[in-house]
Length: 414
Ligand code: ARG
Image (cartoon, rainbow, N blue to C red):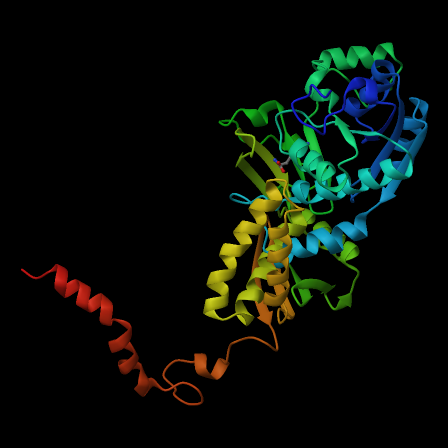
């Protein structure tokens, strides 16, 4: 009998071999030991490379093995992440709330999908992760596992072990788990990948406190950015960036190069309060240099080639797409349906956009497309010709305003 609150949670007696999503940080390192002790189970560690800057994956792998993992795998999923997750997000202009480009939300379903694959290949019965019970990430990971692998069970030790940071540090000391850096100051809670980085915790929880400089590990503070502006020329094909300053690039490299330029110029700092799906409002500091350049560039080109009708409609679907992804429903068929629409709507989103970077801002300054629904000659003032006739305008205005004029009169009858 399962006496858990959800069918996919593991009963302790059924846990024999656990696939642990391992980052190498304090929580999951303590977890690697704790699972072996508490469940008398074997642990296989999986670390997913989604382009976390500055991570040494060999060190992480060595640490897992030293802590007793019977298997330790590192998988480089950057390309799949870029092509199958970030590219669709760009086509969908994906932003949640007032500026979160969803990098974490996009990464979780892929990480969990890989966990399922490695669990199956390694004969694991259970998957463990390090998410807390207060965040969105548990939702994204567990709904992925429950969807893709109904036969696998889940444990989420952080939700149940009731250790605070001090207890975890003590546990680590006691069990010979190496601590990164000093253990005195609690670090920010960080999550990062190719598409951005988030920080939570410490002073960030005080809504009246302005960002303190030490939180910015990627982006140069705008005040210290170069006095010289730089303009990036970004080429898109069918809604996906394919080139930078005339070089044709694979998406991963393009994202990295755009991010590097944004970081130099202080671009992509977002101070965001978010409505989580688990009810809370939480503040995050985001550093999203690549997204802060590529999303506006894409949106600009899309609006240039789209008609007024396509443009008005698409932004509604964009919002829906972003919310599904934020809310952990990557595998929901509506997302796939919307993606088919996004691809169709992006078929002609091909061209070049210039984005000027300067002390924290990224501003579109040029745009060109063979499919632009635009004619420079028609756009000039006062000249008629081609498809546009100024003589036709008054007739249009008379009919366009008809209902409004009638309503006005009806309502203002003395
Ligand atoms: N608030 C963002 C989200 O829900 C970022 C979460 C970051 N995750 C983390 N474990 N620190 O998608």
